[in-house]
Amino acid sequence: MALIVKKFGGSSVATTEKILAVAERILNEKKPDDKIVVVVSAMGDSTDNLINLAEGIDREPYKANYLREMDMLLTTGEQVSIALLAMAFKKFGQPAISLTGSMIGMRTNSVHTKGRILGIKPQRVHEELNKGQIVVVAGFQGADKFGDPVTLGRGGSDTSAVALAGALHADECEIFTDVDGVYSADPRIVKNARKMKEITYFEMLEMARLGAGVMQPRSVEMGQYFNIPIHVRSTFTNDTGTIIREDYTVEDKDFEIRGVAHDQKVAKIAVLGVSNTPGIAHTIFSALAKANIDVDMIVQSIRNIDKNITDMVFTIALEDLAEAKKVVDRVAERVNASSVLVEEDVAKVSIVGAGMLGSPGIAARMFGALARADINIDIISTSEISVSCLIKASQLTEAVNSIHDEFFSD
Ligand code: ASP
Ligand code: MG
Image (cartoon, rainbow, N blue to C red):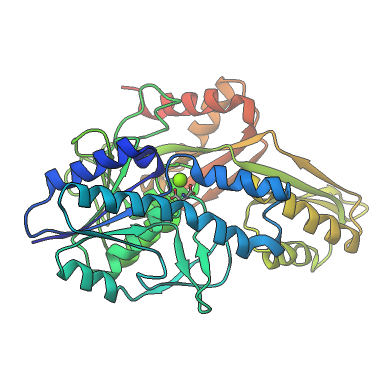
């Protein structure tokens, strides 16, 4: 007997035909005494459509004042898909029950639209499994201490699935999606991208954080925390996909970097002409932190030594731009900045790999690949296992290909 958590993303349940196909596939693969929990996202683009609806009320629906209502709205998307999938199982004669985030005891903090899971008490899930039911769970949502719905950030169903797998002590967590695994670069952009058999949590987390869309970063953190192997595989084939786990087991580690990630959903803000004195960075970035805005790359440059004036340049997620601009405009006045510039036409390209630790030539080769493609680098940042460059968004495809060729030419 195995307890398996299977997660199906929005594209896998986009229509009722697809929902029936998902139910059929699960029943075909299920061994008689397997216990199955299925976590699903909202159908197709329905989360985007719900956001569009909210935009009909106010063009900026992510204002602080609306966030609780946004969660009330967005959680309905997953409620539709769980009900339909449970009905599909029943149609095939399989007992099943749908449960929302709050019904599975998924407790979150109260940071609406960007909630974090505090704990899961999945008593109800065990009870229903023990009755022989397949349990169909709404991804992306939990409830806070008031019982109010809270969503976990876009793509949050992955996190729901892995966290639930951890709380249930599941044997495996399978993430079914429209790609058949994790690649060395986005296969839609790089035609000779390689599928990986395995990748470590550490490297996958960095890939995801730097924009590889396959998994929400927090879901990989959850996998690592609970040490649950995550199998990323295709909804449409039976092939093995990529297994994310603590360490490599089978694949020979004959690669210099693990992959090239890119992120187009970034924006750059420059606070120009602030005084080069203690406390300025703190003032700017604590105001952003208070507004729950993550800052990514940061550069402070000395512009004019004589006047002791500096520029503070940083990047944030594009979705936070409107809110961040407001916060920064307010702070800019306080710190006497000469102006605030915003640039949306930027993108970030990164290389990732634990193997680059102690290999000093790797970053230089990445810069060389960009130079050969005549691409200018705006900002560079590094972590222990990655190097990232901010470039013009229009040059992104070329940049990713050129860097991938440098490290993965056969
Ligand atoms: N439906 C949510 C979204 O589109 C959650 C998910 O798909 O994982 O972001
Ligand atoms: Mg979705």
